[in-house]
Length: 433
Ligand SMILES: C[C@H](N)C(=O)N[C@@H](Cc1c[nH]cn1)C(=O)O
Ligand SMILES: [Zn+2]
Ligand SMILES: [Zn+2]
Image 1 (tube, rainbow, N blue to C red):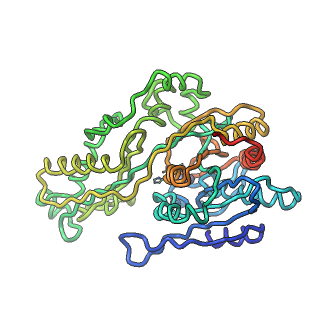
Image 2 (tube, rainbow, N blue to C red):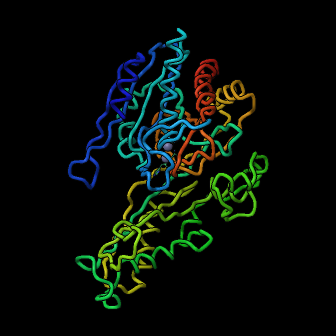
Image 3 (cartoon, rainbow, N blue to C red):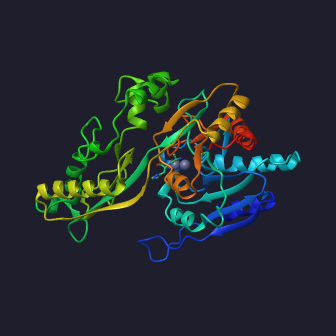
């Protein structure tokens, strides 16, 4: 993907294209991190410099997960383009290339200089990118006036949005090791401490059945909800049926949209993702897995400090394990983390995005926060001392990370126009003091 992007950017006339090597992935001997693709389009000292970030990596996908089409082949059906990455985030990345192509073919000058930064580790916590931003802040990224990211989704399916916050994500693994090899459960069941039983007990104590996090010390770090913030949720263009339609079931924990949105945007949540080493195929294998690695993550919000969070998580998991009095061994580790980000949704970049949305879609955008994470957002804002905007093009029902991920053709086309128009409006906008 990095090489493909490089060749496309070259054809489109981008300059100073570099594939930045990020070194080897920690905990592996020789697995290289995928390179970050940097490129420029325009270097006019009289124009603003807008950094465009996107990611070319995607979540894993297998046809047998429940896809109707091959996940790594783009398939057009009706108004939809199906394929892994259609909305997250290959579609939006390619739309930036389409904007260059359109300007080239129309012989239209872009009113801003663009600095592209496309990475290949976003779905794994943006490993290595933070260091690159710090190393390049006074070199490749010098003079960046604003950052624009198209890597999230509308809240619903009909109304465009501008997004001014993301939750952070701290991803943990719990490794429980017991016997030297998998065992026959008839011969050894009831005789040995089973790693999977230990892990199930720990998992069961992470949240209550309603998803409330049971780890002490987390809710105490969450910024209190002020009456002003609470009021912001009164005017949001969405309903519970919309939520349920997006999910395809009536399994929402809340009975009103305000509570559901606050749970998604401004409170932490804990999700259990899977177990490595456990039997998961169809059939009825009677095995005691010798070693299992359980994976869970916590979505973080203001003012949860990642290091403090690690401390309370490690302490709690160790305490729960100790209470099991198991003779197995436990290791709990942080796999990766990325911070939350919340910004002012009325700054000059948001004003330009608002005008662009109005011009293309004919309506005022809603202002939303994103329950998902884009780990590098805060790093751009802090290290480049600039504002960041999230300007999504996909819909809330696109199925990002899920089976049958899609983007609507209409969203892709109008979304591309919106991103292109944003570049024109931001060129005209007065920067905030
Ligand atoms: C919202 C964005 N498109 C996204 O899907 N982000 C991922 C990033 C991630 C993975 N691990 C930690 N963060 C997400 O929110 O899961
Ligand atoms: Zn993404
Ligand atoms: Zn994603």
